[in-house]
Amino acid sequence: MMDNKKATVLTVDDTVTNIEVVKGVLADDYLVQAALNGPVALKIIAKHKPDLILLDVMMPDMDGYEVCRQLKANDETKDIPVIFLTAKSQEEDETKGLALGAVDYITKPISPPILKERVKNHLLLKASRDMLARQNEVLEERVQERTQQLVDLQDVAMVAMGALAESRDPETGNHIRRTQHYVKALAIELAKTDEHKDYLQPDVITALFKSAPLHDIGKVGVEDSILLKPGKLTDEEFEEMKKHTTYGRDAIEAAEGSLGIADNFLLFAKEIAYSHQEKWDGSGYPEGLAGEDIPVSARIMAVADVYDALISARVYKPAFSHEKAVSIILEGKGSHFDPLMVDCFEKITDKFQQIAKQYSDGDEVQ
Image 1 (cartoon, helix red, strand yellow):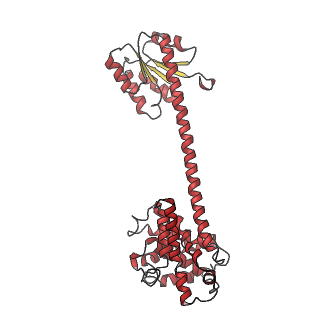
Image 2 (spheres, one colour):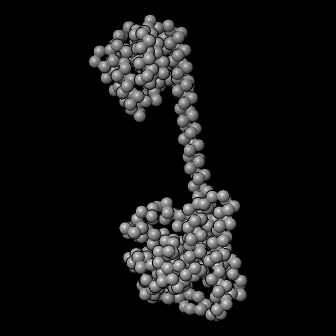
Image 3 (spheres, helix red, strand yellow):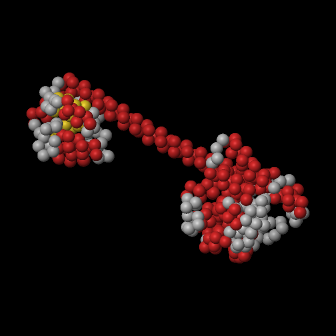
């Protein structure tokens, strides 16, 4: 049949004469195997699965119904078509056989033409089902591949959008990549605490990682004369600089409106862009939020953002050492930063340093 290879039919009957009759009918078209009882049939099937089974009902020790029941209960054999071939001709017998999962029920004495046609038809149906299953598997693989491509594209888009904002400040370099990985590392550590273990599930941490590159997207709205000023900003200029948090939030809200959805990573991106300059003691901006009123995502980003700013050279300051940066963040515990965030940061400062080295611009002091 398929692939120019004969299909295998296993006939199970405790009477040799009946087996010979079946072989005489089917041997020209199929490879016919035989078993004289249920246990032997199950052993044969376990070693070499046939393409179709012809099964007698009345056999000693194990009747055909039990053989069929065991076949259908096994994931390895449940899809093999079973045709009952039996002298039991009552309606309830046929109903029972079909209810057990048989595809057909033929009563003896058999009609050779009918047996041949039914075997052929059920083998064709099985081949069609197998082909459809393979197509579904291929389709599922392609869907997964395409989904992953879209996820990768989304990640690249987020980083590219963040880089657009950072590109206006040539000193930031790999700041986006570093802060993205700091956020993930700190979130993973926070997820071990009683306070955050229920909230910081893997999908939330992934969304935080994806959204982190947009934390300074609002800088695109700040004038170059302020954003690129090498000296200290005036009070008026600083007030304008602070608006980048609002610009960022509004830009992401506009993106949400265009998409018509509120995806997790955009929700976190809004929180981070708008609130990562808030401070635990309420002295930050834009709203002067304090304590747990500041979103968790923004509290995490605050630690990541400040650490990276400290270890990076700027026109207004040299790059601080890793040790100095850690010391400053520890000093900010309870004032600038959430105390629990700082405690978790202190446990993984080596990871922050590793990330900084991996995505180094070459001017960070390690």
